[in-house]
Amino acid sequence: MSGRRGNFQDPVGLVRRMLASGDPAARSALSREALRYLLMPLDWVLGRWEQRRLARPQGPDLPIVLIVGSPRSGSTLLYQVLAAHLPVSYPSNLTALFERSPITATMRLGRWARRSGGYRSYYGNTRSLGAPNDAFSIWNRWLGEDRYSVPQQITPGIAGEMTSFFAAWGTAFPEPFLNKNNRNTAAIALLAEQLPGARFIVARREPLFVAQSLLEARETVQGDRSIGWGLAAGEEASDDSTADVAEQVARIEELIETQLAPVDSARVLEVAYGDLCNDPTGVVRQVGEWLALEPQRLEDLKPFQSTDEARLSPVEFERLQAEIRKRFQLPDDPTGQ
Image (cartoon, rainbow, N blue to C red; front, side):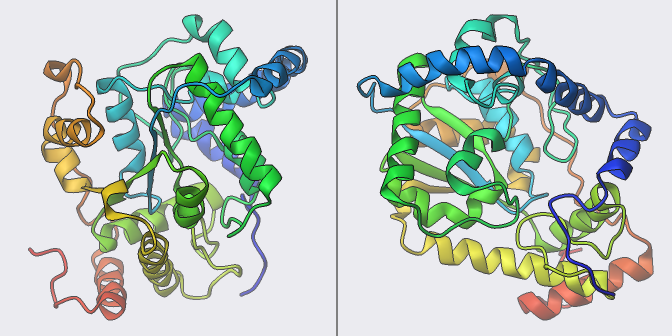
């Protein structure tokens, strides 16, 4: 089977599947997309003020904290937890509605965006207007619109625009900037070079369960397991989706190691999905200590139910285990069970 895929292979089908899911985060994402078009005239107006803001002298030198890692690694949950329990700023779903004026719109309208304390998400989409957002509309300015790959070099002009944006953000919101975007995993080295204040939190999860979740995502998002989805997905549809997704996970792991190699280890912190589920309070404290930030409202934070369990049929799961074992040189029982 062949056929080059785009960011989304079947957008109409995706909308149908999102509506049919009944998931509040999925329906909220669709509603926001419609709202974004309605707000375009206001975005144009606010965009003029945004340009003036970006032209002002630089603001405070604050950390830029970027959560990276494989898609389906628990990175969205980690983002939500840290945003709720550390004194940080972050691009919200409201921010994403204003492509030309994210800073200005968030400053002027942010008070009306409810910051939900919930942790539900739908393939990276969170529910409320005040909830954390991947901020593709911001990153696309400098890294392009392809959600599967990024340039390995940018021009000095683009680098200057990126620096000006984060300086302006820090002036508007004088707290460390936090964001999770899995595509940035492919740009760690570039971002580390261009943003000296950037630090990277790498979300880690057992490759077997990343692969299983990616297979499920292919069905839900692309409507077909044979069509890749997410970082390092193959360019062509595959006749063997199980082997293909295992290869994708292996490519992601290799990519992470390659991107981290030139980065000072003091700028990198790894967080395991299992630790996040079992002891989220401990993870928040660990990240807070690393960033010299005081955690907040930890009494509200409870352990999460891990989804690290077989959800495929026994035959499919065993085959996926074998493919992962082959690529990662794991023992016969990679789950440890």
